[in-house]
Image 1 (cartoon, helix red, strand yellow):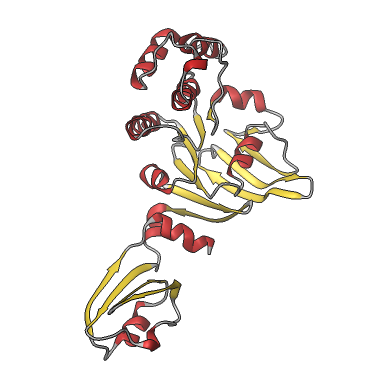
Image 2 (image 1 turned 60 degrees about the horizontal axis):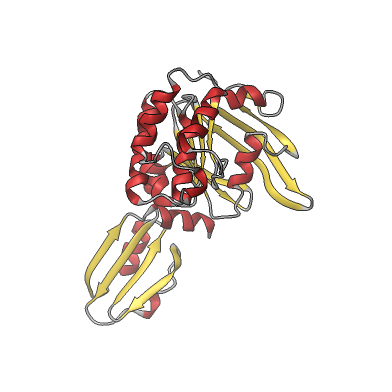
Amino acid sequence: MSTPVIQISDLTRRYGRDRGIDKINLQVEEGEIFGFIGPNGAGKSTTIRVLLNLLFPTAGSARIMGFDIVRDSKKIRSRTGYIPSEASPWPDMAAREFLLYCASFYGVPRADRKIIELMEVFDIEPGRKISNLSSGNRKKLSIIQSLLHSPGLLIVDEPTTGLDPLMQQRFFDLLRSENRRGMTVFFSSHTLSDVQMLCGRVAIIKEGRIINVEAIETLRKKQLKNIRIEFIDTVPENLADLPGMENGVSVSGKSMKFTWSGDMKSLIAALSGKDIADITVEEPSLEEIFMHYYN
């Protein structure tokens, strides 16, 4: 078996008495587009900054492409691309000048040609001064910078912030293309629709701890179902607190809606003999599944 691109063992980072991340264990295989999801403050950015040796771990360890994140950080950075959540390139440089400067660190062959091609994809004027660029264009510049040296691993932290829908789609298409060529992607976001479109597996982080790692399709195939029942007359009172109902029950007129995580046989048995006009069973969205785990 090949060495995991990212291997994390009991990784911990504390800020004084406050916990940033606590005993994280995670493994990302070569060629994956791996999602890392949680709301703001859950520990996503702290995890990334520790992996990139921008912060030192309090305890535990991690390896990227077989290299230790502390001892071998220079080797890791030469093989890794990083898109931060907030992009702040040097304001006094022109866009093309900045990218050529970044490419010089890696000895990128035919750098100028690659830069122009990527700037055309993301619709950035090469001679435009960075201080005159919008936040969205600075984010696009950061995306281009991260891909110049064809990294084996790309780590992205809230990458679509500031991008309009068209540019988001171009970015996703580019990620898929680079992934087909062999690049592994670690995709951190709180925008669940982005993760759902791109990723095969996902880790859910809550309050600095990983609470679940699953294939997205597996998450969808769990017992969780959205149920809507239309009754002929009124909603029976004894159906509002059945074991298996999640996140409360919504009743409106003759209909009731709820999320069900129990055995469907027990729900059918509870509905037996009731005057039902219609019943709908749907797969939940990734966001609903996510909130289920958080609750």
